[in-house]
Length: 571
Picture (tube, helix red, strand yellow):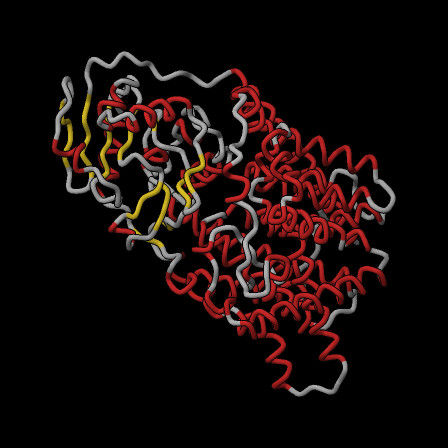
């Protein structure tokens, strides 16, 4: 990383990215926190067993939740979330402009601006934002910068460890973020002639950053359920089929995220045509600049995402289910990120070529610049209000704080599902907040309900509770048999909790009964929450050491750049 004085070519894309990010997020930046599908954000920055990966469930939110909480302790939970979402989109836009200038060094300003808009305003961002996958978006935002760094290493203008620092930073996003950037960086450094030293740095960085979730996951021995492979495969979000949907930047597996305008044939065709022309422009630029490696990760990501939908001879299912760590590939559409990033940069190059032809007027320039917006208007203002911040009710926060101050014991959670439709959240689907707010291990149903059937969860305790409930045991009693000290019943989460509210199991005491939450206690519960496993401790140590090494490398580089500038500006 070199320190240079900002100029117009840097400031204009940054300003445009900030404006576009604000228009996209809008109500998500208001006071409060956004709760949308997998984006479950505690309003109180409290390091919980769930965030640290010690609660028994698979460490899917590790280390992202812990990092977000620590940032929230500095800024406040709502401000931290807004800063991450806004900063991620700005980073993506600025990165696309940087990547476009690698493909076309003399790129016009209009090309940089269009690249910024295309990187932020596309189906990939919309669908991931609706579902709350901020860690995927963070990796997507880092991709163009990592591609630029990889090419700089190839050309000898950056040290071999440069991409490794970015990979370590993306480790904040856990498995989803790392698999995206590692695919891209490895291909850029390995093909056509392998940069062995840089590749070793990058692989070591990825391995170290992944230890915090990989070691506990491997130690648990839990394999991915085969039911989830087809459910999480890429799906068509246009009438043109899966491949065309992916090529135009969409194809996410959850239909609830699909923008309605992409179901219109004309819109789908134009989107596909623009994407293909943009990729051709990017490829032409890459060939001209001897930077073909930039185009490879996108093609590979597109092919893998398509393979997840085809599943030829069950090969993809075998990879996900039987390959150690293969579960991180279950949602393969996320690997489309490098394709989308390169297409965004190519859109900028294509726009500049159109303007440079000198056969266009101001009206066509405006049309070219705003085409991404015209093809996807529903992304504006928090996806039409679907992504907006709300205030979490005081009674839920108070109960969570009170229980967190009480020593000992685990918590059972009802309704017996991990998803909620909170009335105070506009009945929008979101993950339950309770495990992220309580400083106790929480047993909840971690299975994933889908229209095609439930994907089994990975917490053994939750599986046992599910078996009891299926056998006819009342939910509260089923949790009590697991040895929980408390049972938290969310009254307005959208599930059926009437039986739990109308019957009192033997030995249970109501310790709190608020409009939205009831808490039962079993004073005789003997279960003592387990501490972090050895695999978990070792994973955290190795990941933190990786981050420290990356930070030291970055600090050294920045210090050297500043010193060189001072020496260069001296008398």
